[in-house]
Image (cartoon, rainbow, N blue to C red; front, side, top):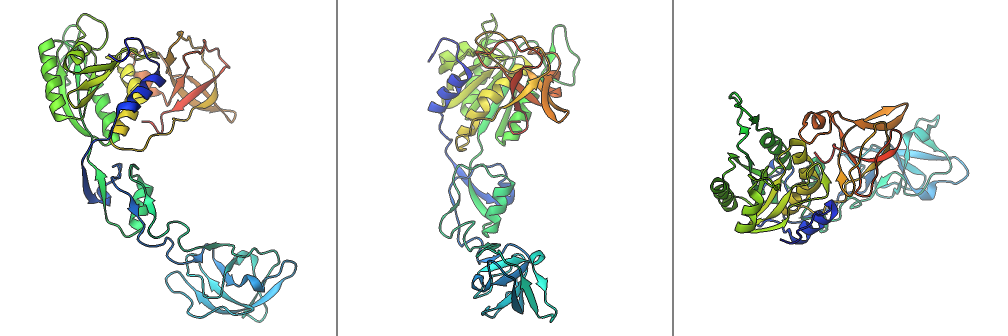
Length: 410
């Protein structure tokens, strides 16, 4: 056991970061199937993007040498340039070419004057350009987006819609991505009942497994659902051994506190090792992390809200690192006024569920109902975490607090 004492959230994240390495293995696939996958090798631009110097606006391609800083100038229009149909001549002295957005900049021209700034002359074949134009304005240079032979995307990036579009703009139809992370998960407890059957005395339906299924599915990992495992040491040991042979990560809910029937932590210590098992966090204090064989194991608490809080504050970052993603930036927090009173426990980082809203043009936050760690409706109704640091004190209505919106982490 690395540390028998309770760890702060920051210490737990740092401890995991020091020991996690991406899984091995990769595959090549069409870009339409690569959404949310992690790039295995750099994408190198095979040509400049844009491939040609072109106009950023509809207007007139001109020579900056013909423009004046203090008086209007008359230029003769000698042709037209369209996207996909360039002007074949050269722009000479006191000449201009009508040009559309994306059209190749004609030879001789180096500046584009937007059409709204130009007046047509009475002769119908000339334009009048006002003073004060800047040399090189409204021109997109060849290679200013991506330079030929340089990385367009670096390995380790997770591929979103914009990355897929960028790859397609290079004419590349297939990419090498890391293999999917394999995650086995199961719930523990004699009180856990599967769906579609009546509850027995003292039983509760297995909400945690479906919450975990949803969170993992959004990450794009390969799922191995192992169902419900009873509070029996032999059954738990068999499940853990089986999961460790199939998966890169094992995710359990329940069975990690100090209760008489909580066996997961004890089995982790015997079958592998325990990195930590207690956090200065609320909700979610009993959370274990370690290894069994070649698989990382994260033993989440049994209470539904604590499952989600520990997953998003600790586990998701670890999974992304194992997937081969670049190190994630610290999730931004925003200061807003709180309109609810909140009692704060000492020396623990707390994550009450909140509802961000606007009032008279200002962002505020209020508690999203009952904050018990078993009250899943508070997560369902919320749109943010209110983040109360370890050193924080009770919050009174009107105090400013930091919030972490769900959008972007869930």
